[in-house]
Image (cartoon, rainbow, N blue to C red; front, side):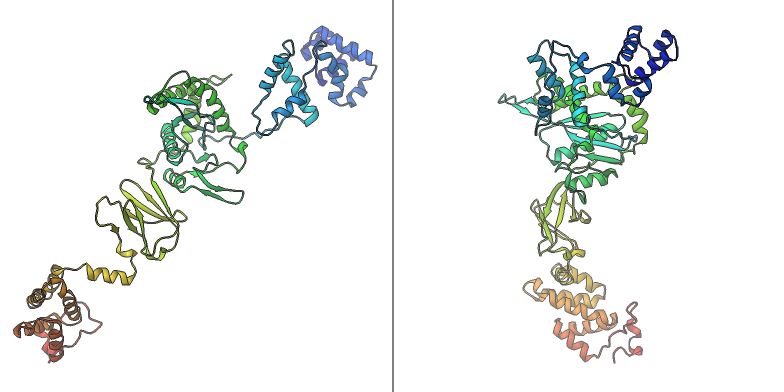
Length: 518
């Protein structure tokens, strides 16, 4: 069968007196084909000018009727039946399966190429042709596509029970070079997904501008046409590598054809190859996956003289960002609907504080081996703590997180006798002796703390010399008590320091001349 241009062009050249050889060379046809076209032209009796006004398909059918193309002893397949089966809900059938089914029922029927040709014509005539595809210009080093291989093959053998277990294969690929990374995991839960992403980035040795995961619950909390909310763990991975998570459009599997094609490719060229051996551990299995994927990456593309690895080194890697310093560490996450009234979040038997104003609000706790990080509901960092493994204290609190009244009581309850002795020694020896006697005067030292605090807070607003003089008077009368100290201050008429001079206190020798006490 020849197309419209060949038919019209051949007729026109012959009508113009061109030699047969010139027509054959121009349209790359044989003499038999040219003679057939001209004989049918004369038999039809339709002028060349009228043929030009007809639809190309109509001209082609006029010169090459469809009934002449098919073998007269073999009826055409029931393409409507196969079309309906392919497009039935949940069907995974394709045209190749349809042809195999047809040949099983009709051993002498059409071969594969003829079957495909007639099937495509049927679709074009009845349904407007195959679905169109959008051509996408890939940018080197821009996107890393992430997905799980659809099949969960039974590859792992339990050495104790002999049970064969399913494994889940994590896969990534790049947009231009299509360099593949694959790894087997026991499940598709969050820790495995994050670990797979980190291992893939290490494998490539560089970071793409975008991570394009499937709309999995492990990566995306919510994705609609109006809103995208990433899973907090994946958001942390995004921040660590300074990349951008860009899932394909919601409910649009065609939004990531690159990785979908490679998933199908791995189902054939990786999974089927893995089934040839027996594996007893994930280490053995992943070692074999690494070998097979290395071969696939170095295999030349069909019809090309370069491989995925060659394209990666030439195009993708030079355009990717270098790896950040350090290694990404996966965290243990704990979501809190409401921060308790004691503004502390429990983790592993310890209670870590947040600013008291976050009470009643949602929060996210992230724990590593050495650190506790607490974020708000939008994954913004609130505070960090060094992780505690000691049995006590159970409450890990930062003073800045406490309200003023709680901070005051903490300060009062955290003081001991030595604290008050050190405070008194900064004033003078008399005050130091007064406080020491006061602490020893009670059966239990703790019972004197309030009296010590009262005296020392009193002397903060009077000169040191005056405080020392009052302390000596209390020691002389052997009455080292808060009440006595207060009465002695009143009796000696000690004046408070002016508010504008809280700094250097006057010397004891100059006090009388400045009117601090009489």
